[in-house]
Image (tube, rainbow, N blue to C red; front, side):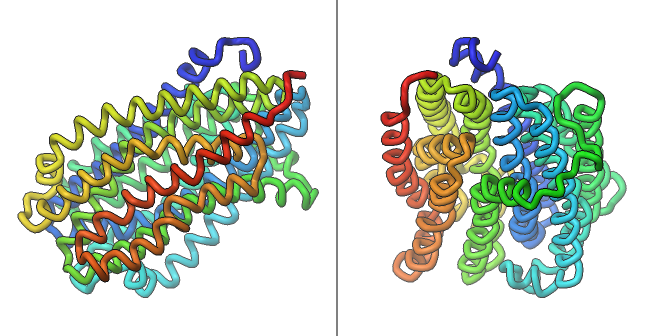
Length: 439
């Protein structure tokens, strides 16, 4: 399938379940933001604070999942199934260990950590109530991200979609029941998230352990070779950078927004959730491309690698243009739907309009980063992963508010997206032009 099916329908086939699962995952994260926002502006700001910490658990999961998945796919392309199993199992148990360690650290330093992430004194009580459940669910979230990526790299994106969608739908149903029906408020949103993450974890685990995949998670398959773990971490490090920098960038954004009060933090939190929902579409298409480029690179079919990249870039950009046009026209209504607070609406509307315009450029940086990661070019992939929320964003978020105030905060991420795309594209163009002929 990976080496003979025409590229375009193959990527679409792999991307559709991935896009759906990512959209559903982001819908239920957005649902948390929506329902919590009904409790007040300070409560709405709490989601932005805690989601930055959630990104750290996702970073561990994506690092282990992408790191192992790239090897799993290439080993399968080279017909080395036993090595694929060892890398998959080793990454899964490594993820469990690292995410559990992170959860313990987060619990020990919860209050100072939330304050450091930009929480104000009025936001802090809500942030603590929500964070308790996010930290409890962290290891399940990390492991689900790892399993999701290993399934995708094996070409089993449909099974990954089932696991993530089920948890997402359950969370969206339970949120209003726990929060308003049982009167639990923010605690209800957190408990709903915890339950949904546990359900997703066990569904994905069942998909892998029931014989539907080559990969197995038996302790007997855990590698004793140090090289296996260094390779997983090296290839997965771009994902760690990308997700880890998401947390750092959110931290800086919250701290800059805190100068303008809870309304600014709430507005930027809402914009962040909406924008990430849109960006998840480009990410989903890119993740549909990754197993194709990885498998065919391992099989020496380089013409298919080139074609897969070009199709992902064109398809991702076209989709983002459509969404940008729609969202731009309804920006004010979208912000009001989350929080009917005049100050939140004014700040959030302009920020959302800037964001959706810049989203058109995101496939340029995303496709380049994912291409290099999928074929094991860790150095270039890591550099490209640091562009959007690191190298380009951090200087902008620190400098622009000094000159343009709140508008500088609204402009920082959109400008970073544009810069990241223009820097990333030449890397992939040069690489693809110099690939050899098919073996």
